[in-house]
Image (tube, rainbow, N blue to C red; front, side, top):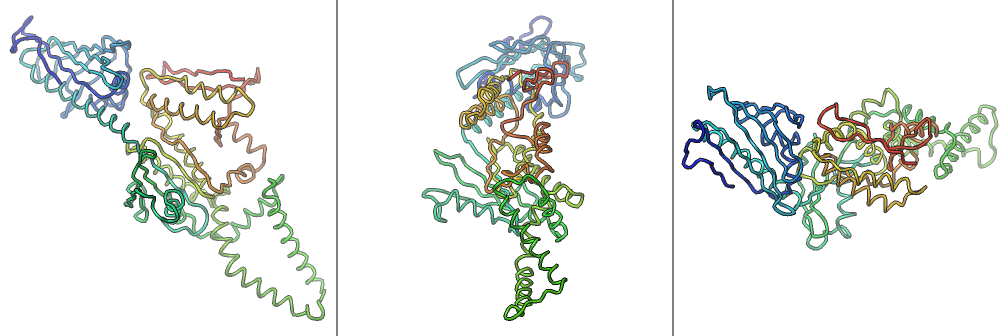
Length: 505
């Protein structure tokens, strides 16, 4: 960084007023540097501003230092074309005992593809305040450079987080995590050649029982931290009545998905067989010969099987699904606690600043929980962008076109444009890091049967975005019956917000 004065050796110019200028080369592009400086997160880092400012001429803002408000500035001009610049008029500090304004210009010029130079010049400084001004702006430039270096290093050292969510049953902490490591990252239960793993306490989950597994990155794979979202301890004290109520509700559903139909029919046959046996016994029909002693034996065996197998299976396995999937007052607190734990973990991973992307992997009922976690995390986080100065939506529109150019979009082509759109949204300062939901043995395949009272109710929930889908459900114009997608463009004030609706079919 260089720091110079327009006056030689503190020489006075125009009524004892002098100028100071300093510049700093930062390792990010001029556009990235511009967004970094003026989005709320960047402002608070280098200027100490609270909230974000309306970035236009006439806006007033407080310049703060370690002790509080230093001086009050007013934006005079904003130039968004290269070289980008902002000009501000700044009032005197309270300690100056002067009614005096200085002018500051902040320029950002392009150095190369991955570098830029930030120049700050303040003119009209009272000669006795030169050192104070110099110290303040030098610290701001250093803070900007520190932040730019962190961004550059993050981009070079990609890191991802994988969150594993277990399924039904009496799962032990770490059990699913260990299974994933052995099944995906290891070969025959042994580490791949050159693979390094570390197991450390999980500092993001509110449980001392959980750990994080870190797998060192290679040239083909980023460094990966694997976490477990553990919830088996939340659903306890399930009763047989709660399980039977859920099963009974499913038995009276129609239509039944074809893959489930054989099991659904088998349960009905067993129920009818028990009813026939009971009615037969009540009617006094007796067996003869060798079969006379069979009923007590069968009853004894069935009683043993139920006590040691059937009841634990119903309570500890089917019971988990019954308590989570059924919307009933007795289940609400458990559902809420599980989702809160998952959403809290996702928010902490985002806030840590360590990760470039997050992947959720759910097994069995865990995939439904993962789906809910994504749904509720997005609702809480999607507006936390930093109002980018120059947002771009070309890639988002490409997703829309891919969805509507044919009746059944090509899955791979859609995923390509989807990932490109996500990357652009990250450039637009959208903080969302979740890129993938991986499901294993997922009941979401039968979501219309398990998550809604009927097919009609399920379709309604999708159309109203109560149950989000991928690809997303478009809106339908009532008058024209056309489908459309609606975007809310980034803006710094409510008055500039607008809906950019596009007809897509």
